Length: 368
Image (tube, rainbow, N blue to C red; front, side, top):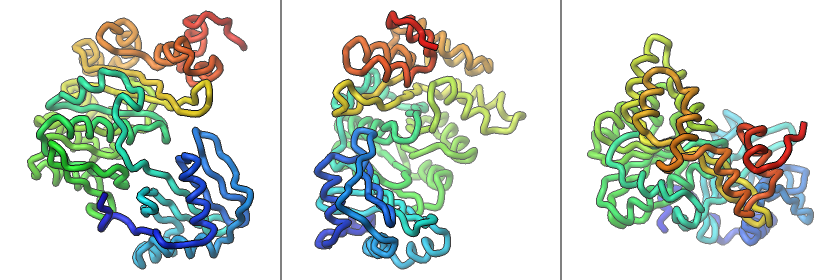
């Protein structure tokens, strides 16, 4: 993989922080936390685990930061108190956030897998493959932070890349997965390094002859407005929202706009929405892996109609009544995993949307 102009390699360095990275990699950690005057922690399958043999100072963490930060980023860190960056080590990549807090400089590292996982290996529904065949419209992957949204989108883009000749433009913050040039032509742009904002890059992408546009996050009105326009003008747009549930996702998009524009936005959204994939990551019964529970809403005529009419509260009942069309609610996804013996009962209850309904569906009494 070529990381030129993307991040700084720290190969060849030595010291306690390198040993911490080695242990984190060996343990399969998703995150590594370095705090001054305290034991470092790694997160493995959502559980934080201490590395008690280490103790770092603020100065050690800052000096490590200097090894992969440019002078411009160091100035920004000094000025703002935090900085985002990325680095590579031993053919692995890390997303870094170095920030100042009461104890001193602190570093949070997210481990980015080198290989793009397949949809099958992620245990995602088969309907995602059908969505990858779409030529236009809007597909949203939603869920809380750390629920695997970026990885799901990467698997979808790579599925397309292996099968279709398309011009794909991605706008990310930061770039996590690097896509090989297979069947598709792929341009990857990073916020800060290559463009000033999602909205600016999205507008520019419309002049770059794209077939597919991946927007890392629809986080503001301008980005959402341009994304809807892009989907409406014949492009396939994939993006994320930090929402749980299809109905909440539709409301979030509409509510971003002023009241006088919301009727128009509902009509526009109803015309372009192809799917909302809402997911959560859950620990398995064995606690040695994370499994996705996935709610699927498809842009059927009934779904489009309730969005247009401002009746998004009816979305859940439409999903429940259309399981034959491969739609599924979050609670039924949890019931499915529980009945297969893949997650524990308490896990299903903890992540449920309607606890009482889930108890009824799996045949246990509701505990008050």
